[in-house]
Length: 141
Image 1 (cartoon, rainbow, N blue to C red):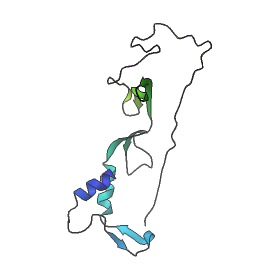
Image 2: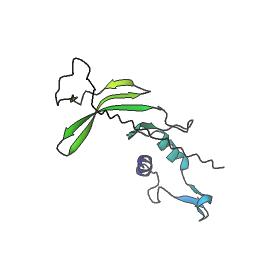
Image 3: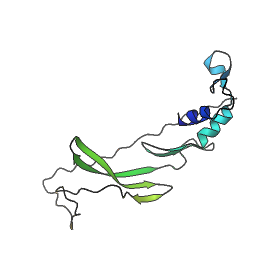
């Protein structure tokens, strides 16, 4: 959507729609006029998605900078709980510590524990969210 907005805002001929098609009315026989220009806008688009940085390339079918991990601190708030980013990892930047967030340690304190927690009789819940990749490939001849 970002690429399409930029493509339409820089359209050379403003008297016609930026998304004009040629071909029959049958959807699989239609082609976008100026599709190369739109493709260039898509390959130059970079943004942060929910699963990490997104950037497209003409030579790959997956994101160009691959894997992205985020460690978050679960903190109580007036509305329930908040998830505060404390550590991020990506292939392009490796490990980065978030300086914007304050870590709330067990016991609702800002002071890190000096030893390890004793987990006897405590139920420990660890959540790992895994998202599957989405790839769509289409060849137009």
